[in-house]
Every structure is written in structure tokens, then in C-alpha cells.
Amino acid sequence: MGHIKNFFSFKNIKNILVLGLALFIAIIVFLLVGFKVGTPFKPTFYNYKSYISKVNEAKINQSFDYKTFNEIDEFTVGLINNKAIAGIGSDFQTINLIKKGYIKKVNFEKLLNRKINDSNELKQILQKIYTPIVFKHLESYDEELKTDEFGNLYNKPKHLWEYFVPYFQQDGVIAYNSLKASDKSNEFISNEKIIENYKKVINKSSITNFKDNIKPYSLFNILNTLKNNNYNNLVITDAVRVNMLYGSPYKFTNNKIVSNYGSIVNENNYKILVDSFIDLIQNSTNKKIDDKAISFNGDGLEILRSLIDPSRKDITASIMFNGDALDAYYSEDNGFNIKDKNQDIIPVPKGTIKVIKFSENVLLVDGLVVSKNISNANEDILYQTLRNSIYANIEAAYTYNDEKAFQTKLYDDYLNILFRDKFIKIFNQNKLNRDGLVKFDEFKSKLRKIFDSTLNDLIDNSELEKFKIFVQDLFSTKNNDSEVYKIIFKKILNINTDISEKKLIDKTSFVLSHIDFKNESWNEFLIEKYPNLENFTFINYTPSNIAEYDVIKRNYFINENNTFDKTAISIFEVNTSDNNIKHQRIRGVSEKTQSLLNTYYNLQIKH
Image (cartoon, rainbow, N blue to C red; front, side, top):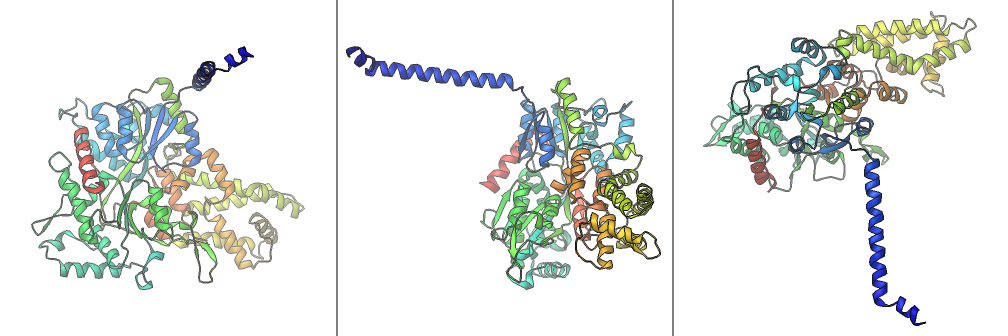
């Protein structure tokens, strides 16, 4: 009995507990080490938050550790510290990365999967692949890449387009939620209201050169117009360099406005540019920058959701990028509901978010950069991964020799995916001659010709009307197979009830007039064959690739009544030919200047 008591003595129990704890820790360490050994190291790929579809993120995550950031400096630090092997950065950031030697030239032979003899051939290829606006924008940085970080001339000038693969392009907009208007008379900010406000501001202002520097569609006047129509709660995309550019035309000093729009940023003027942005916000809204009605957010998805959300009365308007505004314009897809006039719960209707583009704007292009320290093995995996995800079909415009041929091929795929099998099966079930395949090929050939004829710069509803005429002829009594075609499209469109011929014509015309990205069968095909296009359907930013750009512009913005949604297209387009809107690039800066301006910006704006 004494032995038992001794065994359960405090000292023995303590020893047993210590031994047990040590054993437990040893097991945990063993398991962790085993897991680490069994799980191969994955290098890190960086991207902005909410800037890729779930499908493409998963594809990248198979080979890399996919990480997101809010501010571009986080990615820069990752490259400097060898924590990132590649990622999506921004044009202006890349200039300093090139000068500091943190990144290497893109291996376009691997990305495009073709032999390229020299830089001149590469330039010709890229000019065909990117939109003209984007390639011209990349070339505009050549003047900044003549010298190294110390100002010494390079023996051979460098080019941004050799180090950077454009992802999406963007400019700035002001958006507001018309359902959050304090009264119905202020619900819509018309052009007339903007001009009227401009005249009032000019008459009231004591600034001597106000009229020379403030235009009707300036950011200043639009913000002031919103304020005067009780859209008082503003969220601003928290992008430091972009906001400095927005503010650069508006330095209020000595009863004058001094414009530094598009000026080079250096250690001597960064404070002036940050202060100019503060001047812009405070003088246009009559609120201090730290007022609770003024907020900042670096996540575009969070911004658009807070703007749409009917319960968020603290957010009525926003300075945001056009891609986020386009996503917000399609508000019914974002999961928020309201009650209609019959008190029925419905999604927030499309077009609830109104969008205005302002005159002194930014052109910003984000894109791929690759660390100088990436291994050959990881480089091979990187380019193969990108070719299977966000940069799939990047070479399409060059391979097909023009973007029209690629788009017609895509339309051919669309007709095959959505119609071919059902068309042939139903036709053969209803006709004794059973020549459904022949009829489908004839049907598709005619549609391809019509579709090809609409691939032009016209955004005119008469182009879509051609498909209605085609369907009317298809269903006409003059066509011996008209009744069979009606049966075919009723079944393809899942119409199980009686429907007038007019409605059947309208529904059939709609599904044939464009590549319908909302169709589930087509979306599954995109994920497999065209993940780059599936990526757009999630992000809604403006593509830099000409083939993608033209496909989206021609097909994505079709209303249910088979007309072009010109409002959506105007948000989507980055239009540098509009005389009322000027676009400036953001210039590269040194690491020291970037650090100084970040610190000052945060002190002045975020406190």
C-alpha cells in the first residue's frame, strides 16, 4: 500500500506530467516536421486583393503560394526580400524595380510559346497583342528608362514592355448610389446639374484663376455637385500615387490654383502633391480630410459592396477605378436586396450605381513582373501556369493575324457548345431525311457570316438587328423547315409554355446575336479553354489584350432586349481620344522618395 502511495506522490505525478508533456511536444514536432518534409516548398506569387477569379487563383495555387496585398509597396518589399518570385504589380512600380535590378526581362518565348529572334520582332508581336492605348502607354515610360537609379545613361536604353506583361488597364471614375439620395429630385446627377453647379461655383469663387483651372467635368466640380445634391459620404480608393495624381491639378495657394498635373514626383515636391489631394477633397466637399464622412479603403471589392449595400448609409459615393465601377453597375450580381414598390424583395437593380468619368484622369496598367532570382525550374512552371490561367491565349491576336478571326472562332465554339448536339438530335427526330448535321452546318455558316459583319467599331443596335432578320427568315412560312426550327429553339431555350412567335423570335435573336457569357454551359467551356476570359467575368476590369478587349466589348454588354448597353460600355472603355478626358501615367520614383511620400501621406490622411 505504501508503494502505491509513493507512486502517487506529488513528486512522481509531477515527473509523469513533465514526461507526458515532453512526449506530447515531441510527437507534435515530429508531425510538423513530417508535414513540412511531405509538403514541398511553394514559392510565392503576389497579386492585389480581389483581382483574380477563384478558378484562376486555384490554378496558380497548385504550384505557388498565392498571396494578396492592398498596397503595391507590400509586393515591392516581397521582391526585395526574395519572398516573391513573381506577381501582378503596376507600371510605375516596375520602373524602379528595373533600375534597381530586382526583376528580370520576361521570357516571352516561354509565355508566348514561340521562337522570338530579337527585341524588334518581340516589339512587333506585342504591338499586335496589346491594345494600341496600352502599348503606347508602355512606350511612354521609355524616357524614364534611359538612365539607371543614379542618373547615369544606360549603354542601351531599356523598355518597360520587355519586363512587364499587361494584365488589366484602368482609369478613375466617381460613382454614386442613386437609391441613397436624400430625395427623388437629387436621385440622378444629370449633365445639366453638373454644368449648373459649375456656373455657381465659378460665380462664388474668389480664386483669381478658378475658371482657367476648374472645368465642368473636373474631379473638383463633380465632387462638389455630389455634395450639393446630398451625396455627402465619400469612400476613396486608397491608392497613394493615384490620389496624388488626382490632386496634382489643385494646389490652392495665395488665392490661386497651381496645377502640377502629371509632374515628376521627387523629394522636393511630394508634400505639395499630397497636400494638393487634401486641398481637392476638402475644398470640393467642404469637409476636413479626417471627417467621418470621408473614408479610405484599398480593397476595390469592399468599396463597391459598401456602395451598393442599401444598409450602408455611411457610403453614398466613391472615387474608384472603372473596373470596380463596372462591377458595381451590375449590382444585381452582388447579393444585396431591396423592396420594390409592391414590397417584394428584389436584387438591387442594374444601373443603380451611376458613374461619371472626370477630366484630369489616370491611365494605370497592372501586369506581371518576375524576380531576377527565380530559378530555371520555377520559371518554367511559372510560365506554364500562367499560360493555363490568367494569360491563357495571350497570343491569340498575333496567331490569328487579327482579333476578328479569333472572335469569329470563339463564336463558332459558342454555337457548337450551346446548339450543335441538341440541334442535330431534334432535327433528326422531326425530319425523315435525318440531315440534321448538314442543316446545322448551313445554319452555323450563315450565322458566322452575320457575326463577322458586325465586328467593327460601330456600337449600333442595327448590327444586332441583323440576327433578328435572320431568325425571322428561319421561322418564316417560306422556309420548309420553319416549324422544326421553332421546336429546336423552344427546347434549346427551355421554353415549356405557349409563347408568341414574336417572343420566340426575340429570345432566339438574343441568344444568337452574341457570345453569352452568362450561359452556364459556355462558362464551363471558358474555364477549361479560355480561363483568361472567365477571369474577366469575375473582375470586370478592362483587358489590356486586344483580342480579349474586343471580345468583351462586342459580346458582354448586350441587354435582354438585344441592344447594346452603351452605359456599361462607356464605363468599360478607357478612351484616350475623348477631348474632355485627359489621361496621365504615374511616373516612377526612387525607393527613398516612395518611402518619404508614403510616410507623409499616412501622417496627413490616415493619422
